Every structure is written in structure tokens, then in C-alpha cells.
Image 1 (tube, one colour):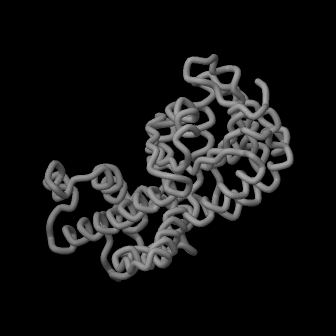
Image 2 (image 1 turned 180 degrees about the horizontal axis):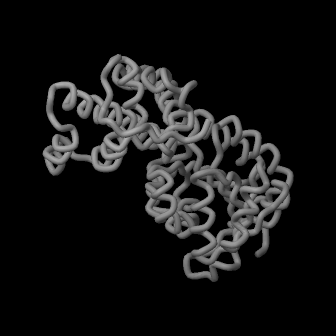
Length: 316
């Protein structure tokens, strides 16, 4: 691979193994995403602040790197999957001295719209291209390579990145830089609100004397059906709050929704209530699955509890 004024990514017809991808951030999502890329034929170098998480990918054919510079130095593509916009900014600053002009940085983290625009400007000043491409689908979607990927950036950059993104899911270009984060916020608004509504429906069914599992079965297939009713409705009935998507991540995303809404001059009353519900359990249950919206609801209704199963919760 050469690094000149030409774009360093390969055409779709080129040999996949000649492109090196640096994957920065090996968490619940990053681990299976990096494996999917290696399985698709790319050379993948992984870096994480906790080196053991990157080392755990070695059996899957991913090369662990101790430093960011080592990971990105020969990479035509850099993918970041990190905890917050602040962390993404820190990692970009650390990587910049080793990035080659013409490389493409794909940030798949969930950040604020304004942060994505700032990353784009910072990288463009060093002749590095940028896509913001947050995802939805959780750990199961990352493992299956079925993530919904919402990308913002230039059309030619998206076209060149699309084969890489397809290894992890279904990519869609939704607009210029920053637009991917807007789409993700819309996604999380719907997800967070629906989780809370499903919790309310199931708890109401039980409190009013119906069988909540039977109610869930009865309404599936109608207008109230959804993937959240299917998957997380069952999680709530089982009281299985092992993540998946975490309370802390859902709260961060909803807070970013409210920031974006304020910037656009909008009031989002339902999202405000849903955000407050997650905030009420964030200190106590930060790592619980976001289906723990049920626990926030039960906290507001003393004496009411869905089912009799014990709570399955992640270790603190």
C-alpha cells in the first residue's frame, strides 16, 4: 500500500488482505466487530487501553498492538469504537502524529453531533478523511454481522468504506459528516422510549390481573409488535438484565438526544421523561441491560414486581 494524495482504500474488486485496518476500542461491541473484519479477510490491528482485551483477539487472527501509533501507522482505515466523544477526541489526538494523509477514520462510537463535526474538522486539517458511522443492534448484531450502520460523510468516502462496513452489518449513508450521529440519536430515542413503554405495558398487565406473558403473546403480530417487545419483553419477563446494551450507554445517548434537540430549538417531552427514568437507576445499575427500564418503573411503584424470577444482573 502507498500513501500519497490518492485515497488509500481499495476498490471493491481489490485484494482485501492488502488493506490494513486499525481497530481502536475492544469492548463489548468492538470485540465481535474486529473479529468479523478479520474473518472477512482484512489485516486487522487492535488497540485497547486495557491491552489484555486486544490480546484476546489474537486467536481470531487480529494483531494486538500495545500503542495507538503501532496500530494506525500502516493503516488505510482506522475504526474507533469508544465509550464517549471525549475519549474519541483523546484517541484522535494521540493517533494524529502517526496517521498518513489520505487515510480514512471511521468513528463507530455514539457521540454528540457537534463532536462528530469537530472530529471531521480536526482530521481534515491533517488530510485525513472521516465518516461518523454509529451502529444499532447490540452485541448480538455485532456477532452476527447484522448491525444497522448509519454513516455521515462524503459520498466517495462512503463508497470506498462500504465493503468494510458490510462485513459488520448494513451500512446506509444518511447525509454529510455528523449525520450518522443524528440518525443514531433518532434510533436511540425510539429504542429508549419503546423499552419504557414495553415495561409499562407488562407491569400494567400483571397489576391489573392478566398474565403478562400471555398479553405479550397476544399483541405480537399487531401494530404494537416490535423487536423490542419480542426480545426485551422476554428479557423483562425473565428478569434477565445481563447486557447487551447498558443503562449507562442508553442514558448517555438520550442525554445527547436532548442536547441535539436543544440545539435545534425542540422540546422532546417523552424523551425527557425516559432520560429521567434511566438516570434514576444509572448509579445503582450502570452496567445492567437497558431492559432495566423495568426496574426504574418498579422503583416508582413500590410493591409492584413483574413475575417471580430472581433478577439476573451483571457484577458491579
